Length: 552
Image 1 (tube, rainbow, N blue to C red):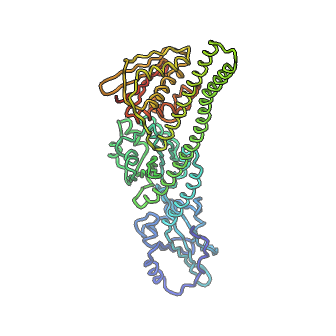
Image 2 (image 1 turned 45 degrees about the horizontal axis):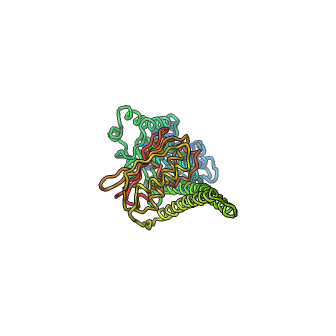
Image 3 (image 1 turned 90 degrees about the horizontal axis):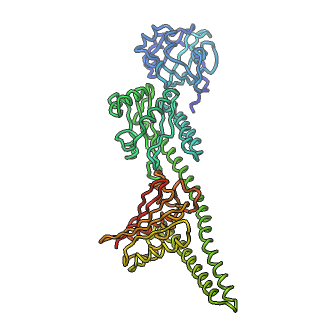
């Protein structure tokens, strides 16, 4: 902080000639003015004239004081308006002590003030003030540096509260405007594309214009130039002077051109938001008449962008961590439920079989019932083993390891029919049809393929809660086979199709149906390990077709 509380040097008696004094002042490099005892300006050097917008010292001295004062607004160090009589020279004429101050001069049409430390020295003769010499020390660069450091400090406080990063970035944009720029826009890269999360400008009408442009002509990261180039390359783009030719090149049509001309852009800097080597988006700072961006400002702007990027990255990581914990808890709850069901069936059937076995008078019918109980227990144990195997495979693949496949020749027709028979026995409202050529064999891992088919047929039953027909169609060519499972269930919304094979993801219309969202993800990973591919076609409300293709 610049200290403006210095007491000026004491008044001194002048013993030389006026000509000598003028020669000393003329040789001074900084702005200097001299007032007589009435406050009238009687001398100014060239630097002082330029400071207030005059071409020469003579022109400055010839101008009426009203014209001089009208050329600029005076502000104090806090940015408040400052009265003309509060200037150090006026105070020195009144014999007041401490005739030094930091003063800002904001010339008409220039939003950026020029700052000076003004030191006023009274020259007396016989105890009376004859002249006051005003010496100006330009501290504009120092004040700019101070303001920028203050912006970084304030930005740090804002970005520290970055749980909801869109609102945080809006607060950052409003901090930056108008201290660093007339415009601040922040775009973030999301899976669905480029999302504008913040827009700031002092004029609400221009802010509304920018929002209308974004609504009618959304940002396109694939479009050459501007934000798209910065996000693709990760390099800052500086446009010190925005020409109309640039606007014409950027416009998509005549209406777009008229709208962006209305923004009044004259200078711009587009800075990437980079964290952990990844471009998360871009912050665009733009100036109108007063803000012109130069190369020297880029390190500062990039530092500000880095801080914003780290805040966005931290917020996303926090969100992902919370989501992972939620998914883990959901997974454990659902997995325990899914495991409990076959375990209860196993226990119940074994208990029934044990009681029947303990009866001394057990006849043939009771022995047959016992065999049914044990067969049910065996099937339930198999389903439990499939579920545990699925979870182990998913854990193995998620940790980056390949599966230890045990390939052998498999009767695909028999395998499909066995899986279908198990599911048909468990449902009374579905009819599961199989179309498969007999004696169709392939070389694969039979245990894992059975798990995938069990999952696909099980999903077809689960997501057809009103029953209906399910068709499992097996076709073969010389080099491959395809197993298609077709249902007439709830289907998958178009917006969910692209992510349906991601872990823990299910169709948004399946919220009322139990499931942990790992089956399809794990099945696709297993099919890929087997050298094939799993795909889906679906229409919401009409059903889905999942097709597993495998090499022979």
